[in-house]
Image (cartoon, rainbow, N blue to C red; front, side, top):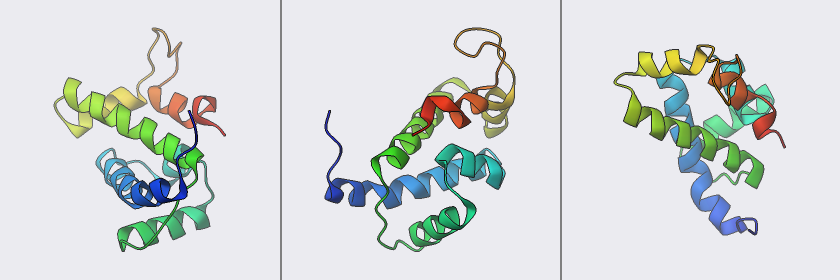
Length: 117
């Protein structure tokens, strides 16, 4: 599979980031989790967030878009399975012993090496 073109990345970056910010708010994620999930530094995150929220032009790299996609996928599945944002957050932060979690919380896996560059 080839990397998305500049135009494709430009088309989805703003909406994807705005959706991520709304999900992070829904899940009451602290900034440290937001930074870890996107694997960026605080100033970069602040710049991206400001641009996206003002509907300005932003073009994220494929790696960032893949991380956003993973979060959006988890969110979509949790919407199907659970009845409230509190239940979603509880599921994300609670340790699970079954595969593939092996004693980790899903949020830890999303923050970790599975989505690293």
